[in-house]
Length: 96
Image (tube, rainbow, N blue to C red):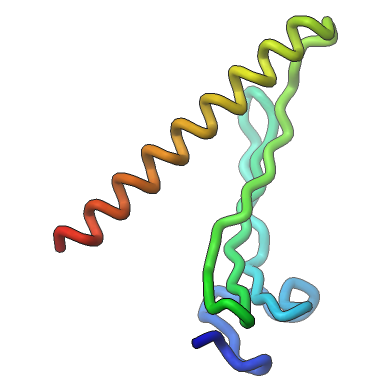
């Protein structure tokens, strides 16, 4: 069961962050040596599901071939790290 349109999560940013049937936290930003990351928590009223929205801005080489190779390596690495984190968290939750 989802939240009612007027209910907010404790972390909801309200105002312009909370709209279109979703509750969103204020974005958290990290500047890194390779670029920047923005993370936002989101709760969908219709489905009742919560999720983490990530946006990354990463400096890549100007050379197209090198840029494509690096983009594939970055996407593959991100996929593996997220998969590992999700599996680890799920296993911990089940065994408690």
